[in-house]
Length: 141
Image (cartoon, rainbow, N blue to C red; front, side, top):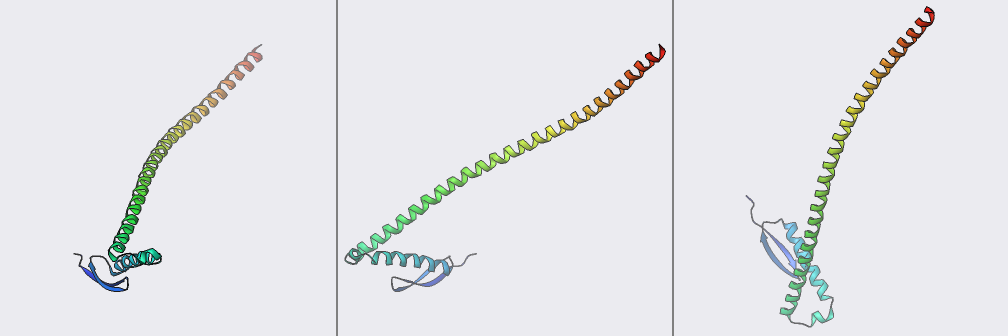
């Protein structure tokens, strides 16, 4: 069973203890993301002059925006992946059909080559027989 873990992280210059089932490395990564958003906002002069509540709301909205954009991108990539999976399935089906057709054609070629050899042999025998018959009728005269 997965046990709950905790990690101390630094967010906005304050130390917080986060608890959860994720590894500490992941929790640090989340804290770093929030810190980068705070740094991004703190670099804007007008942001420094607004109330703490509004700062928090703007930060939350920005993080939610990032989340929904990432979610839309994931959905788009999953859709592309589904399309590619279907294309691969169809290509595999076409490949198998082509292989079966090739095998059938190869069998037909082999059969026709065998028949051709038999016919050539039969032709040679008939020519020899005809030659013998013609030579025999000439010598009889």
